[in-house]
Length: 229
Image (cartoon, rainbow, N blue to C red):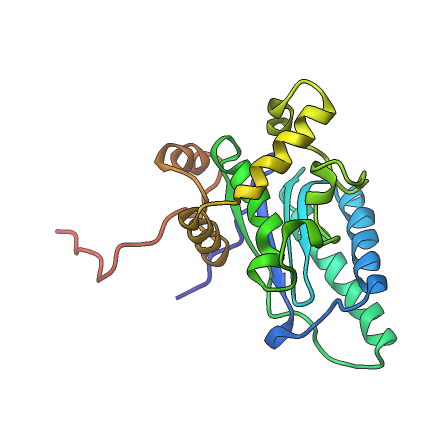
């Protein structure tokens, strides 16, 4: 069966992920993470991508973003991947691939899933057993939204402004919310959508999204199609 084309909807929220090949560690020092962050800052601006959240781990990275056109997401991911591999291979005197195939992505219903997705990113280092607490990981967007640092990579989405009337109130509310983390079912749904490529949202969201793209947005029913008379 032919592989479906990647779903990209300009102006919609997307969650993307890419992993190291066979769990290859591709970021292990502060210099590695800093270079990856700077590269994302450069290429996201160059290709018209708004980055709302991110987490960089030793063997994977996930980014919550909004592309400006049909090609901006693919071009940005290709540029980040190509430049980083060249830099990493030169630094560590290695050759060959670094990534596990194509990046994965899902289009997200921002009205329902924005906050769960941001928390999903914040808790990724804990789930991966890289750190014991969300406060301990420096290479993600949690530090920005909780008021610890100002990250130039982050373009805060509209939903963040609903957390409070002042920056301090929003930061405090966000930090308190993240401490509870996404629920187990939310983690399962987000992970499933990310791995499968199907949209993350309810039936109405998917139906509205279908009017914007000719690509099929749900799995086919199992079994052979019925014959027509």
